[in-house]
Amino acid sequence: MPKQAQIGFVEQFYKYLRLARLDKPVGFLLLLWPTLWGLWMAENGFPEIGRLSIFILGVFIMRSAGCIINDIIDKGFDKDVTRTSERVLVTGEVSVTEAYFIVAGLLAVAASLLVSLNEYAVNIAFIAAFSVIIYPFFKRFFPVPQAVLGIAFGFGILMAYADTKESIDPIAWTMFLGNFFWAISYDTAYAMVDKEDDLKIGLKSSAITFGKLDIAAVCVCQFIFLILMIAPISLMSFGFIYGIFWFFAAIYSFYLGLSLVENPKEGSFSFFQKSHRVGAILFFGMLLDLFINL
Image (cartoon, rainbow, N blue to C red; front, top):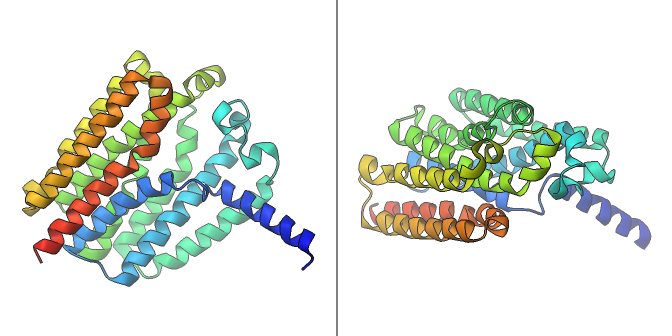
């Protein structure tokens, strides 16, 4: 292949990576950590490598597919929003037809992964996929579309329990609910970045709905999330190790909230960008606590 053709191929491939948000790992991590909570808690220890690989790959594929679907549906709005005006579908660097083909390919791979899961988990996966598809439309009329994301982002927890235990027990539902409030928290902070543009073009968001109380809403939802994530201690007899990590997660959340209060303009995006670290801290707390108690 001539050098010029190689350069052109690499440049086009990078545009596809941008379309799938593979250049921005934060969103993947925000989905990955709750899924890993579910896997480790359901297994009460280290899950099988095969199952772990399927769930991790599934998170990456569905997040990418969800982003592309969102971009296709929101293409007409994204050009009028500062943060999204340079997305590859808006600039024409990638065509909508190409985007459809990529989504189809990703969904085909996702479907092949489902073959390894039980029927209960597969049924939940279809509900999760449906929630991802409908999310962009909720931004047209629903005052808190972030609630739809909160539901969609927690299905990894339920799928992990469904596939591992063939049941969903109280600890799973508690983590699912905790993740729901966590997603509303960090995604409301993210929506604050687009607040002025969304108001101009008529899109809905929790940042707009909460108005002057947007920062308070972010902090309250984060607080509820942390309270619910005490569940591993109360429902599974987790001990000192997880408690220490939970405390670190709470301190870091307080730091993020304080930064948001002191500087809302820059702190809102920073809150979103760094929130995945809270999920990581809680996961490693679970991991160590389970390991020590084996």
